Structure formats: structure tokens, C-alpha cells
Length: 514
View 1: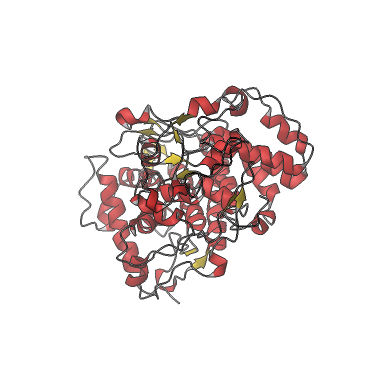
View 2 (view 1 turned 90 degrees about the vertical axis):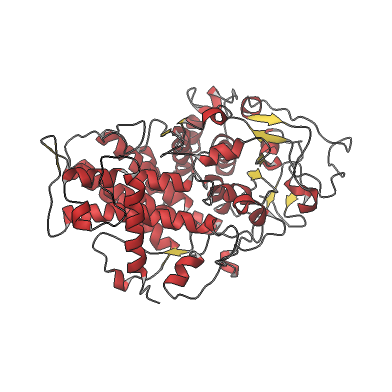
């Protein structure tokens, strides 16, 4: 079915994007009633519009009102019985599909990221329309031709945005600057993700043929990325998108892991941590993820570090599977991150009538310094994540277990520096992957919205009935006269489970060896 009214939506979103960026720089004209030619009349206008796009996308994926917090609880990485941001609804047992009713209290979890994604996309598409369209505008900044820099940056944004639309939704629109909006159709997630990677390839190719450049202030707050650094970041995002798109273990096995390896090996050698000011740039995923009384860490994560620690809270709040049958108290681990990143709490403040399975003795404290100002560098793509993508791809593409072990044993890597753990020598691919995912589960908590969820999804470890993706938001469907739906078909829901090292299985009663 054609999205016959999407052009109207796209133009509205274009206005939203301009308004949101105009809030950053008071020297920019008032965009509340934008005329495209007037708004984009000068090279400075084009630079400013393009430069605000990553912020729009970043804030949306790290936002309280986005899907990030809910995806953490859906993955049994974090746990929460509070209704906020659909965390309870989407992590309750048994699991249930997302409520895609337009009146749903937490509809914003699905809607806001969609709208912000297309807002960011519209910003760069309108810039590309100026420089790649009939006008062939050259962007001269202080006497320097920066057209190729802006072009590459816009392709980079197109890639990231489409990639994450493919990661989060079952279907979406693929929109370039010259797309005929009257012919738009929803494309399945696999095509949307592939389009994201293709746009990132265009960004990389453009940069490879460009003169050196340095991105202006504000493109990514706290950074002035060089051409080489932006090329690395584009490669890392391409590796991410390829690796995280699969909805099942079978799809994960079919990924071109040699491509993931190539992208990741050309990826970041540093950690991306944009500088938050809690005004125009924010990371509420971290803030609310560690705020006392809110989200806690699921016992599944603690059980990874202490294999005898209960991986689930008993459903009757009494029948502990410990040796003495009593509450286990604090966990113990050789991994130094248990002490540095996690805080033991003897009591729970969650509501028992909502299920004791929400309960946990631990909260995440790694970002506690964030709670003072909610400002400062906020890691969203750690070097260690890219390293783990390399390690995983070495195993899956080449069965290079020794190569993966060398990365895990890197004395400068997080496993050594922060965990203080001994060298490993996995004998099989499965053993190597188990250690790699341990590192991902422990080290990447609350980094970029969705990472833990994507990992559990592609290993068939989301609890049975957990949505594998979100539907197109109801508000969007209503505008384009598209029948409302949610992702409740068998192919949209996980058939998976996970088993703790203590033998407990989630969901209860499942036959599970993962």
C-alpha cells in the first residue's frame, strides 16, 4: 500500500527538524514557518541544518521517551516494575505485544523515535537536495570548499538513521533526497537496514575521495572529528547495523560476517562520548537507568559474574535456589566490575503484585556521577564494543578463535583494565562467543539504546513472546490511512528463552539450553 500522505508528514517533520535546530543557535532565522529556499539561502544555513541532525537522532535513541529503557527490560538486562516508558508492560511475564493504540499511555515510546529519525533525515536530505540536485550548490566556508565534507556527513546521517529504523521497526520508509514521496512504500526491516549500510558506504567512499577536513563545532558536541575519525565511525556503525539487524539466531548465522569484520577492523580506535549539556544534548537512558528507586539490574547479569547467584528472583519471594534456601545476599566475583559498576541493595521498592520476577538486589552505579548535573561526556559507542564486534566476526567468519582470544586478553582492553580477569584460551567457537557476549553484557550496559536487546534477539534469548521489533507508530498509520496493526504475528515474537548458570530458566517452564 502506497503511503500516499507521507509527503505531508515529511514536510511537517522537516519543519520540526528546523525548529529543533534553531533552538541551538540564536543567530539562525526563525524557522517556525519555513520556506525551504529562504531557510537554506546561504552556505551557513546548510552547514547549520546538516550539523544539527546527529543531535536529533542521538537524543531520540537515548531519550526517556524513546524505546531504550523498555528494550533494556525486554532483554532482562535491566528490570523495573514501574509503568514509565512502557518498561513494565513490555517486560511483564508472560510477555505481550506492544500496544499500538493511538491512545496508549506510552505510545510515545514508539512514536517519538520514529518522528525524530525522520526529522534528522529530512534535515540532511534537504541539504543534499541543494548540493546534489539541479542547483549543485557549492558550500564555501571561510574561503574553503566544504561541499564534500557536508555531503559525506549527510550520507553518514542517512546511514545511521535508516540503520536504526531497520533495527527497531518491522518496516519503514527509505528516503533519499530525490525520492518521489508520492510513491513511498514501507519496506521490511532487512531492506531498511541494508539501505543504512549502503548510505554509510557512500559516506565512506565520499570521504576516501575528499581532502582532509575537520567537522565544525556542534556536529557532535565535544568533538571536531577529522575525516579519518568520521570514516572510522561510519565503519563502526555499518558493523553495528549488520550485526544487530537479525531477529533470530538463524538470521544471525546468515549475516555476512566477513563484511562485519572488514567494517569493524576499519572502525573506531577510540570511544565516542558526546558532551551532554542537558539542554540541547542529553542522555536520559543513563540518567534514569541509574537513578535511585528506578531501574535495577536483572539478576541474569549478576549470575553471569557469580554463577551460583540466583539468576531470577523467586516468583513466590521465598523459594530461593541457594544452598541454604535463603536470600543470597551479596554476590561474589573475580570480575572487578561487580564492585565498581554494581551496588547491592538489601531491600526492594517495586510493587510485588506486579510480579516478584521484577525484583533485584542490584542497581547500576557506573554512571552515578551523572546524577549531579546530567552533563558531561556520555559514552554511546565504546571502543570495546567495536573490539567485541571484531572478535565475534573473527570467530563467525574465519573460526579464528585465537584471534578473538588475543582481543579478549588485550592488556589495554576493558576485560583486563576494568575486570582484572585472567587470560582466556577458549577451545571452541562456542566458548569464545560465550566470553565475548559476557563482555558485551557486562561492559556495554546503558551505552547506546537497544544494544542489549539486539544481542539477546539475535541469540534467540529474548523471553518467549517478546516483540522482536516495534510496529510503525499508530499516529503515522492514521495520518497515511494505513490499517493499524501491531507486531503480534508469530514471526514478530520471540520463541526464545535463556538459562542461568544456576539452572533457572526464563520464561519459567521453558525448555532452554541458551
